[in-house]
Structure formats: C-alpha cells, structure tokens
Image (cartoon, rainbow, N blue to C red):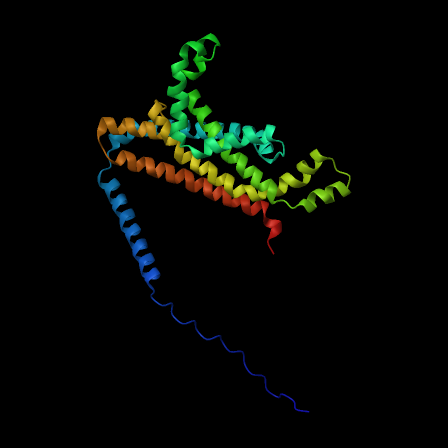
Length: 276
C-alpha cells in the first residue's frame, strides 16, 4: 500500500479569461455612456437655471398635484381590487351567464386606450345630461375628479381581474384535494390555502399595475384635474421654462423608484420561506 506523506497545497482557480468585446457589449457600454452624459447634462441644466422665485411659487403646487396623483391612483387601485374579485370569479366560471359578461368587460377595458375610456365617461356621458339629471347622477358625472376615479377604477379592475385569475389558476389542484381531505370548506380552502399562495404569484404583476397607473394618471390633466402633470402644464404655461417638465419627470421617477423598492422588500418578506 502506498501512503501520501505530503499533501498538495490548495491551488487557486485559474483566472477567468477577459470578456470579449462583442458588438452587444460595445453597444451596451455606449448606451450607458450616453445615459450618463444625459444625466450629467440635466443636472448641470437644473443647476444653472435654478430660480428660487419659481421654486417658491410653484414648488407647493407640485406637491399639491403629487397628493392628487397619489390619491387618484390609491383610490382607483383599492376600488379596482374590489371590482376585480367578482370579475375574476366570472372569468373562471364555467357558465356563460357569468363568464360571457366578464370576458366582454375585460376584453373592452384591456383592448382600448385608457384616455379613450376617460373621454367616453367624461365627454360621452355629458351628451346624456338630461337623462342623468332625471335620475340624479348628473352631479356625479359633471365633476372631472369623479369621472377620472370611475375610468381608472374600471380600467385597473380589468387588469387586476386577469392578474387574480392567473394567480389562482397557478395553484395546483392538489391543494384543493389536500384541503378536502382535511375537511376544509370551499371558503376556508380559498382563505387559508389558495389565496395566500396566489398572492405571492400575483404580487409582482400587482406592483407593475400600480406603476403603470401612476404613469398613466397624467392623462387626467386633459380633463382639468390638476394632478402632478396638470400643475406642471400650468407652471409651464406661465413661465415657458422647460425645466418644469424635467422636475415633473423627477417626481414621477422618484415615486416609481420608491414603490419598486418597497415592492421588492415586500416580495422578499413574503417569499423568504421559499429561499434555500
């Protein structure tokens, strides 16, 4: 028998070969350099064009518009989530009496632009002023804020219904069988087993939907709702200073970035048991 008298010292792994300069890598580096130049240019522009009087005059209005934007999106998302539940249940139903209207609703609101839906509600229903007055609804539809809430709620409800339906369908049928073996009712099965698992799947799409709603909310400025973009348009119309739109973009980017990081933290928190 042979015996090893001296162990071989551990050797470092060989260095990785340098990454080749492919066309894709060169293009990526070029785009990064371009964005860096644009970012530095915007910072220099805002620094050189800084006007304390304009900031003092229009700064509070930006924050007021920001509050309107967040209120609009928040209310619409919550109401849309409530509306999406029966719509998703209808989409999952095997009876045409329920699945047919739900399909048509989702098909229409996902297939047409949000701005067209907003115009149909705000301007289109205005053509029926006499009829709406006769049933006492004209006071609601004459207010652009109410019309914006209604349009955004119906729009996001269609998207949230599909998100919820897809998340529920992603849960395996074995979960239902296991719950039935434990003697759980249908409601208990959904509340304690199916919905918690489905929400993990739906969390990321829900976050994307909220971000899209925040960016899409700028269209309400067209119907005289002074949200963040509406205040931006008003500031530009009085100063003709292009940095008004740059500040609006910074506000929107900040909101989206904060929301994205909060959503990442929530996702890590809820999926910590899935990581090994």
